[in-house]
Length: 253
Image (cartoon, rainbow, N blue to C red; front, side, top):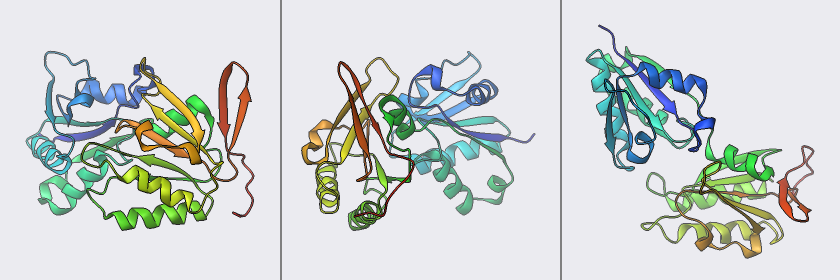
């Protein structure tokens, strides 16, 4: 019997934003591996099993899921958002590359999902309307000086920057340093969007200027979008403001 492994993106948390492809993949799997809050989002049948683990155990989780699939089972690894954006698809590929030959022979399916920056952008307007990049502020797997170098390069090149993993109890200082780095390149009038739980009942969206952005405005579940010098805010009276980046760009000043 040949096992299979699906790596499934569950989107930002709103059930309506789980793709039909992802729902079908969940229906077909028997064993589900993932970070507990993501696995707990699944409504499983009595013949389906969830195996939860901590958020910092990605590689171990990937190896455990691959070993289960090699036994001939239909296995799923679940991620919030998109599994290929700072998530489990890369961890599974890393495990396969360094693992036994049997893991390379498995049927692997990667099922995309709506990642946080897309969900936040859709709720606030179109801040990603022109060139953009995504940078994780977690220095668990890369040094901070590399993160800072990438922030400076992105801001200097005129990219809108989506910041993932901005702050946590174990990493309380990185977001403040990131704002300092970006402020060395960008004017204080650049719009900044703080988006959390997009599309869910506890959704929180806040727009401010870079000069007013503070680390305490975010938590680990927040995705932050820092605009470019082209990004604009449309004030609409009592209606929420729209933030967008025009499709035509000029050379960074």
